[in-house]
Image 1 (spheres, rainbow, N blue to C red):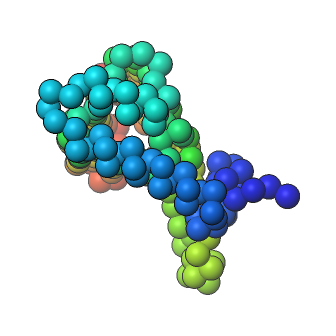
Image 2 (image 1 turned 180 degrees about the horizontal axis):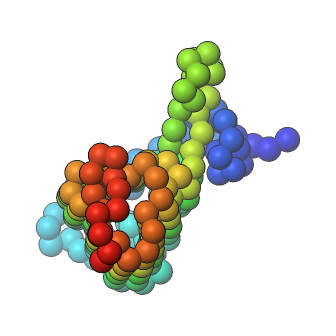
Amino acid sequence: MPTEKEKMLAGELYNSLDAELVRERDFARRLTFAFNRTGPDEIDRRKAILRELLRAKGSFYIEPSFYCDYGYNIEIGDNFYANFGCVILDVNTVKIGDNALLAPNVQIYTAAHPTDPAVRLTGKEFAKPISIGDNVWIGGGAILCPGVKVGSNVTIGAGSIVTKDIPDNVIAAGNPCRVIRPA
């Protein structure tokens, strides 16, 4: 029988109040709390906290404030930058390629709830993975919804809500986000 964590990562309905998952979220919250309370000159401390929390392949910089659910489901490539107010609900995997830039208040949500009220009232939820390619710039206040894939060499306009996959080599914007033109 799969654990609640295994169900969560498989995209199945799972119980988020499972003791193991609560412990892991609490651990991530303690780390993000410490990170968000560092001083502007505590760059090395910030990086050490984030290396304990995330899977980073190379150089990266994240401005406080930053929030996530688990941390271990976030994989960032080399030369990553996230501006102030980044939220990544990493209930499932979030894979971000090299040379990605997130403007202020970008939000990435893998977490979802059933649309059937009877199922939703059971307290179960599910999540879908998100992937972001190389050389991507996501504009301020953009939201990526569960299960989307953003290709490489993409610009997502500020305030966009990405509900469907975005192909490589385009500029996309809007609510819902759609391709505007080639990059």
